[in-house]
Image (cartoon, rainbow, N blue to C red; front, side, top):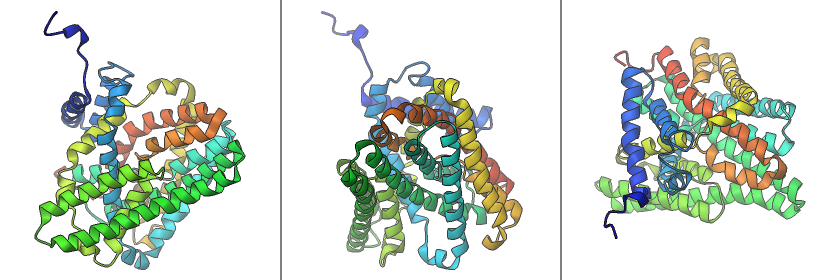
Length: 399
């Protein structure tokens, strides 16, 4: 018997994670240096090349095993996105809240009309439209870090991203309950499902926030390393509990971030060490997202997917252009801010499974269309955001 059974060797999850990181960094640098593309685009392209759709270096089983790291990356980004929302500042800048609410609702209504016209049922259309309301926190935060963008537009971009994600998951929960009510004919499922998803997720996030504040106060301001480990542990715990209790991790983590920023004593919670050490999770997230892409869906669903993305890009641009003066921006900067909101939320992929279980016969068209949307959005979104930030001057000139 051979001691080195090369013919039966297969990658394990740890080796797969190592491949995600190593090839992701190489791909990101090649894209950045040779193609002048954002590193994020390089990560996604690397995943697409090594994933099941191309070289099949990573199969679906290994990608599923890497979900732990992917979910942690998304959790870190959602927590930080929630931390960027200062409710005291929004009381002064109420127009920002109103602008975000208006364009999100307009996006929802327009996408619903488009998808219904495209042949999807009401339940599938409403859930897809809800997902289209949100901008990706992880793409926006990583793009700001990569480009070192700062300024008036960047500040409003992060706030609008968090608020749109919050509105998106709430509307999605309501649409999911409507689908249960329609397809299962169960009033209890239709009413209790969205109530539990929204209230249960919010309660988990609030409790995590209160616990983080209390423990950070107990640790003291000098224990920065311990505070970083504590926050990481609470984020991981919150992701796990949300999945166990069938709530929405995205909503729970956004509320967690909001709570630690805005509740009394929230100043004791500090996350710089957490964010600086989380970059390798973000790299793994983008490479895994690229590996999950299914470009073959474009052959059937590209017209509807392209119309979906053009519509959800045009509406924020229109609203921010119209309301730019009320937001203390020039119309030109308002237009570019609307374009910067283009990347589709990374949390949308996590909600696909919940959607398909509730949709029944519409599940195939829903999944196919969303996968086609992801192929275009994952590649184009970071490019458009960087272009917009460069045009408004938020990216330092040396970049």
